[in-house]
Image 1 (cartoon, rainbow, N blue to C red):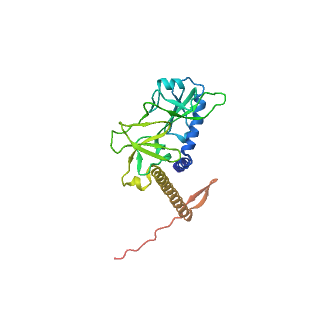
Image 2 (cartoon, one colour; image 1 turned 30 degrees about the vertical axis):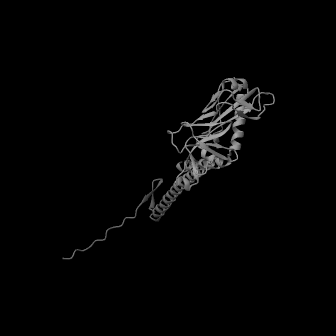
Image 3 (cartoon, rainbow, N blue to C red; image 1 turned 90 degrees about the vertical axis):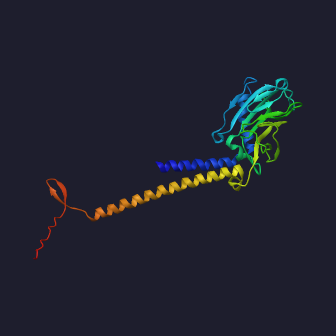
Length: 281
């Protein structure tokens, strides 16, 4: 039973690592969009709804809302850690739009890599889509144009450190770093993925290639440990089996004779009389 459980655990760890390698930022964007649009297209405007994600993307939190462009321009909008100020307009302009918010959690360092830096908070992403034409279910992606205040993203970090930097993360792997002006807050001009990073000093983290490498290293260690336990259990079973076989051979070699009592065969041991020994004085 324990052996089956450990084999199942090893399979889960291996499949998680395999699936993680197959997910890219572009494919994630597509999955999130395809999950969000059917949920949001016919919901009430101005209300944030949680978007359920597949099991293989557990750890990623997604939410979204539908609103009118004039509401966005007049009031702005808050969704997750993102605040879009009033005065913002969509590019191109549409009557209605959908905004989808993502918090990547422990997937941040798997999907994105900032050389020489590590993330100190989950990466945040937000996208906007045209929701004007329900019949065609348009999935045209939009951008934002803000003329006054910038879009702000509030991250949860441990205090304000001078080393903290904001990172704008492109789907093609491009990274743009800029200074954090206010505590745990990054300012952006349009949609995309964003994070907070800190320079990495020479450490074990560096030696394994940053967050993504560390995750692969941890998965490999987990598989190795499970493998060692499985080998140990198999060796114990083989040892016990060999010991049982040896005991069986010993018992077979000392088989007792049998005699009939009534209608039954009864075993008996051959009696060996102790030979007398004469005492000598």
